[in-house]
Image 1 (spheres, one colour):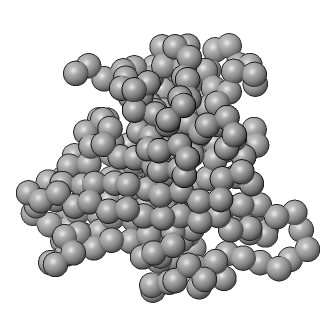
Image 2 (cartoon, rainbow, N blue to C red):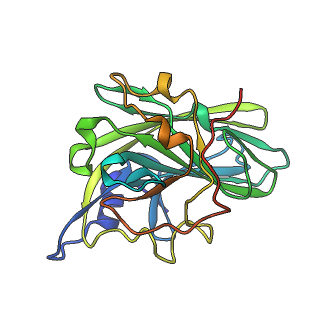
Length: 250
């Protein structure tokens, strides 16, 4: 079921008299998957052997696990890639090469990444006839710490499939939703619907973040971090065993 932005917004925009919340919807290639709106791309486009779905889970809080101090928290944009490979060759998704673009701030690489199925970041392999879910977290500039301050962004992404590089740019726009979106409901993206440690910290982030810089203190990547939904949301369910977020050796 393909949607335009207007149609996609109608899916989630309610007129109930309650406190509104924000969500980000793809402007193009929008489709509904288990009640969620994502941009869907057949891969490869000329002879599909699977697809990639790109969704935003909005803004999250990131903080060092010890000590817990709200003053230490950063806010980041959470993106999810769901990659279904139905072909007979492995695909490659290099998380360090993915970007978001903000007007006036340029491009940024993700600072933290986690992946399902025991896949190891930064380069996530998607074997034939398997699916991988990859979550990426991009620290936001000081002036864009809340959804009401961030009206839109673009996701600039690439994937190597069947020996070819697939490159796309997916625009997202903010909409108001009521009641708030249920990020923790049973109809999330499949049974592997929760993000959690271990997180891989991108050691190149300091040079590949937004123009003007979003500093990530060393205490964030020298040990464990907690990531939960804004504002101050509940605890996440761990996808795997907790482990320190360590830079990947190059």
